[in-house]
Length: 165
Image (cartoon, rainbow, N blue to C red):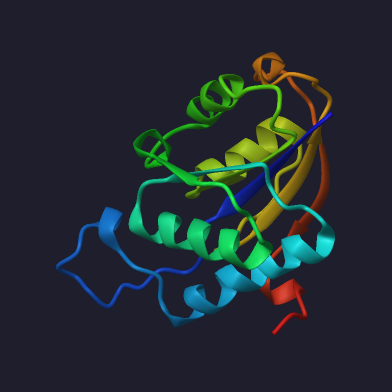
């Protein structure tokens, strides 16, 4: 069994119209919610072995804040291919991971995060900003992951459903 954590980036700011979508920063709520999700991961005992994030600023900042708050000690790997993409890119990236990683977190954008959850679980779930899906996958090796793999959605948390300060 492998564990996949799917995290949508935290709330971003629209206060800088001169910035491209790619360069938008987190807003105040996003800066608050990302560490809350990381703290929740730590409380759940779900500290990832590997974190992969979109290279867009809001996703990188979210991933780094979550990583710090949950106690992740590895390097957060940023990937350009996770920005403005489709679920297949996530599958290909995950398939290339070594077996040693039991729990992996990916950080990205909608609608791809919702589509990824749907492909893997058969469930249509809303993923607001900073939403975190916990999926158990019936595979022993990441290379076995494919579009037909059916995992179990163990939980889906949003900042509004957590009572963490």
